[in-house]
Image (cartoon, rainbow, N blue to C red):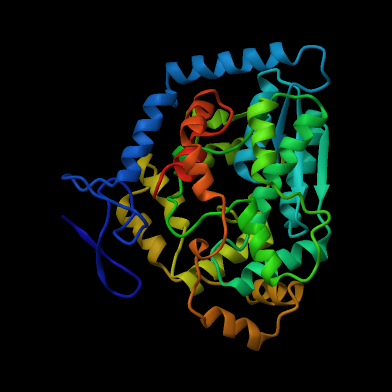
Length: 387
């Protein structure tokens, strides 16, 4: 079985179907050398009929139901937009299918100019309304600073959870039962639990210990609120890209030609904080590079060879000095304090309070909820199954 050289010139076993290597959390290889994450994606493709006749029919029925349930309402669905490829393509897709979405943007005040312009261009062209939740910048920076001081991997997790909370709140406000998300397991995979995890209790606990500014504008999702929106309000979370033949590369070309949309340079780089996390924080502090998610997807989809993907993955990345300087300025950190924290031994979510055990306890209920599209299947796999 062929092994590959890492950046540190060590030989490691790499999946024969992608570039996930033996150091990926929870990875296992079958007798042919294929990893369990490739097997999981193949299972999801079969279940959702991704890219085939089954997927088209399932998605067509979902859209029919959304239109039916939305009769008499101003909007029939809520869609999160970030200015990135996936959410931008999703907006165009559902507009072509005749849905009447309300676009929702969560502004953590770290947006890139390109992402902001992408949102404006698309929504103006498609005549789609936008609802934006802007968080107080000092408050958001204090949450980010808390996670940095804690030394945990989930530095930007408050953005993801805050976004999810706002989507539920807006859906409730406008009495809409469907929230659509631009996520594709084919192009992104499903990140293993391993060292990364977050929920409302985790964010609250980290901030309480290390933060200085009270959370006022930040929308914290508690376990009770989550159950209220999913189990009692019956707001469904749909990921249309799970059902179709979707390619980021083709999507970008369509968006560029149709809307004058601009690419921002890489996966998760449409926001300055996520850019720092993926280009600096993960590689430097945790010796982790999540670009293998996207590169593995390119290999699985026969867009790139394993050798080429591995070469890109192990190539030294150039980091903009201005990005680190901006991070220090926003979080009011000295270079000395920054270097001290970056050199400290990493800490993990298991050392702090979370809802993980509670999600596991209610696993049978969440299993039924993901079958009814009340929560995404990826949520069930990551949060509710014991690791």
